[in-house]
Image (cartoon, rainbow, N blue to C red; front, side, top):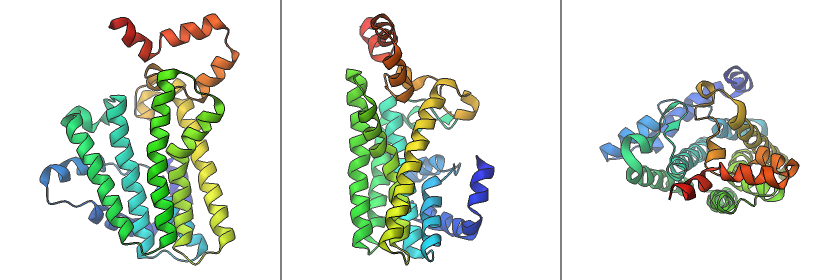
Length: 270
């Protein structure tokens, strides 16, 4: 994966270095605890797919500028914030193979730092000076929350369908990708055709990314996956692999699957 990302990022190699500067600056706080937790969160750069997409889109349509760096930073901050909150909701002990923030600093600080990151994203938004981009980002913030809540709702009811699943991952994952590609175009010298094309590309890439991630939960190796294998299943999350299994299972098999999922286990323990 790293080699592939390095290869496609050749046109923006110098821009990524500039992005790192803007990203680090946008996270600074006067509170030492916040700085310590944020430093821990971003100590490993990860794939940084969303900033890459934003910078590449801008490069395709024209040039990368200061506003592009601000949007790219904003998108990565939002992504990190959602991961922090996700780990609290999912009670995760691991994130990318390392102890989660909640495991080290407990959930109260995790939630507050996640909120701090969202506030920093909003600060970046006010400095963009592009109403079109602000509308995209405001809609994105709403969709991220809706996607997460929809997943929790369907996990409780265990009535996820393919249509609802694609709606959920479109909000929760693909919206960030499409926001990255479209805002990258909006802040460059792009036309409507280019904006629509890049938005569509980002959305479809995000969908494919989430489907692959959900599939890896069933057969990847924890060392490379960075989180416990089968965690989604035992948390009661109904993703595409499980939806497919349910479609091909009889009543008895479906009942068995539901019993070994996390929500059923909790009921039995109570």
